[in-house]
Each structure stands twice: as C-alpha cells, then as structure tokens.
Length: 300
Image (cartoon, rainbow, N blue to C red; front, side, top):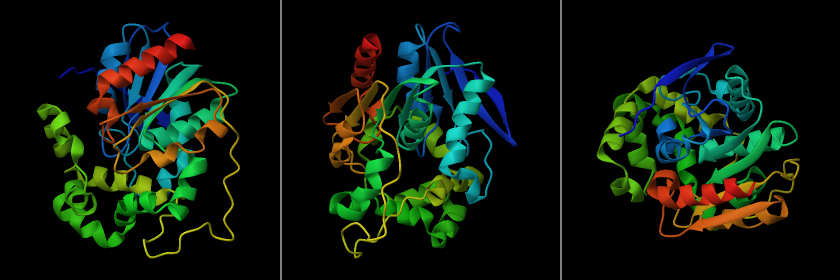
C-alpha cells in the first residue's frame, strides 16, 4: 500500500484540509477530489501512475479524515465546497489545473469546471458523477435513477442519527445501501482503514452533511413522475473546456442514463464507458481509468 505524506493546508474561515501534494512542482497539476464515503485514497492508483509527470494534489475534503469537520449542515453547501478547491489551489500557489473528481468529488468538480473554465481550470475529468443540469431531471422523471437514489433520503433522515451514534457510519450504510459489488476489488488494508474511519462519529455526521446540505430533491418512489410545474433548470452555462467523462456502466447508484444529454452541454466531450465495473471505478478498474486519462491528457 503506497502512502504519501499529508500536508496540513489552512484555507481560512477555520477550515484546514489534509492534502497529498506530490510530483514535480513545475509540472502540470492534477487536482483530485474524492467522493463519499472515502478519502484521498480513492485516487491512489492514479496518483501512483501520474506523479512522475504531473503534480498530483489530493485533499481529504472538508468533513473527511483529519480535515476540518464542522458539524453544522450549512457548512457543506456546494458553494463552500467549491470555494475550498479554489482556496486550496491558491494556498499551494497553483494558478491553472485539471480538475479530477469521482462521485461527490465529481459533483464538486463539475462546479469548479463551470466556474473556472474561463480562467483557471484547463480540463475536467469526471468519473461516475452526474452533471448538475441533468441529475435533478432524472430524479423527477426516471424510475431507475429515483429508485437508485432512495438511500439519499435515508442519509438525510434525522431518525437515523441514533443508528450512526450507536454503530458509526457503517451502521447506516448497512441499512440504506443494498449494493456492495466492489468489496472484493478493494485491497484488505484499504478496506480495514476505511471501516476504521467510519467509526469516527464526528466524521460520519460531517460526511452525511454533504447530502443534507445539497439542494437536490429526491422524491419518494410513490411521488408522481414528471417535472413539477414550478421547476426550472439551473441556469448553468455550457462547458467549453476539454472534458473526459469516465463511466462505469454497472454502477447501481448512477446508471448510464446520466450520460444522456451530456454531449449537448459539453464541447469538447470525450466519453469512455467502462463495462463490468461498479461505482468506484478509480480503484475497481484502475488500469482502464489510467489509460483513459493518459489518452485524454496527451491530446489536450
């Protein structure tokens, strides 16, 4: 198991992140954002592969690991999480970078790319994270995606807080998540470390606050299907930086319907499906992810 030293980076507003910062300092920057319920270790295979030629920066995002873990829900709204990324780049003296994200880290990466495409973000690489202009529509209209996202309702329900206090995050995951396809793909040491982190109660509630602060609406399965009359699509601009979307096609949380419509709002777009792979594609299929990134970075 490859380990890299973590650097404590102060962002201000009483937020500090533990960060991997490895690779040549004068090299192009890849800034990696992990998802729920993981850590910077999500990207261990990619950092090992690219850090001889790229400066690889991978934080434990706010609420995770040893990074700051405010307990109030309001500290986890998307604007604050996106701001953390730009402040981290500022603190490390990074002007321009490629943003790389998976799952919740991918959701934040979309926001970083959309806000920074005219100035600081050169490229975007997104792995199994829905585009914010498309995901809400699917939750309203698509039975498969709505069913797959019902766990989010459980994560938001304060009635489950006692379960988390008694058993850690793992207790709630066991109740709300029915898919555990990648268990055999994770190295035993990585899995043991992840399970240990889930026992930290402050971190557990901080991680859940990412869901509780999100404006995304997840209707119950018995709610009508269709867009509400008063719903308006978010006023997001098209994305006009080179963008690679890597999508594991057997993701039970985010099925491939999330790809429909992407080509109309992202140009240029490179789409690489990864068959026979579940949600955690960066470490379930690291060779495929590394190869897709290599081709993309070489062309842009």
